Amino acid sequence: MQGLSCYTAALHGYLAAEWDATAMIARSVRLAVRPDSVRGELAFSHHEPSLDLLPDGSRLRYAGAASSTDALPEVAAELDRHGRVVVVVDSARLPWSVTHGGPSAPHWLLVEGRGEPGWQVRDSFTALLPAGEQLPYHGWLSTDGLIEAMTLPRQWQPVHRLRNQFAFGGRSVASPSGALWLHRRHGSQARAIAVTAEQNWLIGDAQVLPFLADHAAGGQAVITEHLEDLWAAAGHRSFAYRWQLAQVRDQDTRQSLETALVQWEALPRLLRVAVESSVRGRPRPTLVPAALQRLRQLSC
Image 1 (spheres, helix red, strand yellow):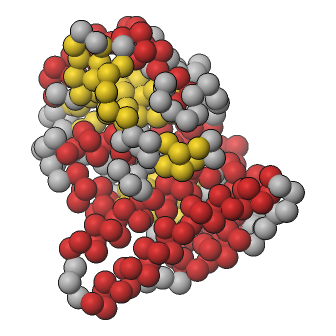
Image 2: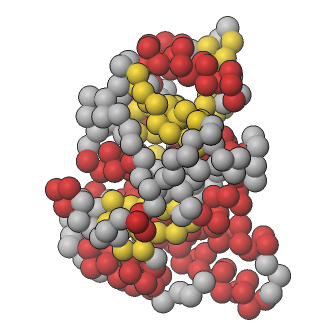
């Protein structure tokens, strides 16, 4: 699904079984950043309302088990109840991932069925990553393969832990270790903790983009650490603009949306150029800050 992160690509597949997933995700897109997280890293939130709150009143929440082997009966039960389930895997352990065998990173995978070959899975995530082009996969994964993929690191890197925590937009709580999947809970009175209810968040382009431009000016290490977060912001915004363009007929509005779409779609390429230039020993420190400042001038 063009523009979506691995989280929202899996979630799109889950939602599409019952609702207009494209509209739900597109309407939710906005950008918020918390600059004062533990140890100084940035937290990113891409959605409001939070996407764990479903239209029928149910809610998706992380569920966990001590090991991926222990998790499979629970994953099977969730699959039997709802016809699909999202599981958290390590992209370094996915056979079709371009980062297979590399550093661990969280990834969401949609499980749609099971049978003699194992588990039918759908991974709609597609992107041009530093390691190569990630293509979608739809097929079977053996039980041993799913156990392997769901075997997570004992501890995620801080930036990964934050991405898991704010994957829906609002804050979610995930077990720090063991296997994880998304459990759909009905009749819960609990509500997601919106970032607007928490302190120290910068919300919306007017606050976030100038801050990120200043932050990116701090050097290549800053850009590299949050490369995936910035890529996700650009992808989600482009996804939302493409959906809006399919709805509107007013020519002035369309022109404004098309201009914004071109600028946001260009950001991943500029990020990649900045990283590659630095690797070659020819850093271009103003490239990303200037691009973020240009995005701030857009009014859509």
